[in-house]
Image 1 (spheres, helix red, strand yellow):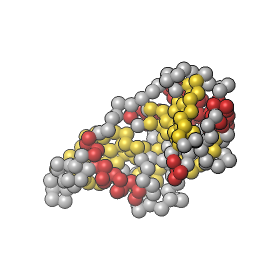
Image 2 (image 1 turned 45 degrees about the vertical axis):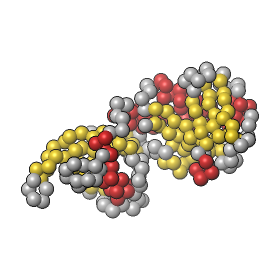
Image 3 (image 1 turned 30 degrees about the horizontal axis):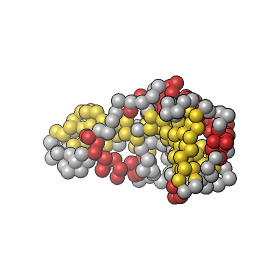
Image 4 (image 1 turned 120 degrees about the horizontal axis):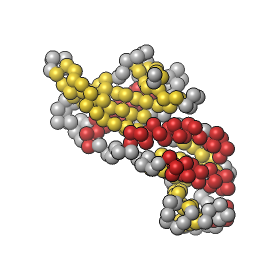
Length: 251
């Protein structure tokens, strides 16, 4: 899992020509390497040394038309800050605009605006890294369930206006609960229901834990798992959702 950023060209989203990246960055980084295909720069690397702590940028094709870069959630804050600094230097010198899909992939920021949002970048990285650093692909999430059971959603986000963490509720203070039938996976259920709750299919799995038990309509006591997710923040008043939802601040 990674913290992703998208870099768009200000003058249009065409690929760089060979030599453009090296020309723009050679005074900023000791190591710059262009990856060239069909006489276009489809990717490039920058860093202090060759193949050591480099930051990579890869063009995502004609449909997406931006350069993607990333930082693993497994790194420490110092490495994350260096990654952000590299992105800012690259963007300033190559005239790129930055989109942060963890917050809103449609909003393009200048390098200076991106720097101003540094506090939000840190808060977002920390909240996800805190629980994903030791979380690999969880088989409980993807494998078909052997028996029917319940799940309880803990959906978190960060409000970009105050940089505080919030959780999503039904109405004013009820967590959303659901069930996983035999033969389907938690992933199947989440990907069906998250758009109904948030108006978007974007989410990041944070954790799966045994929570408690609950009775089904036949009176059978079934296990219930707590599913913690991170989603991009949205305004419930301006987004169409199947259910009436609201954000609650953590105490």
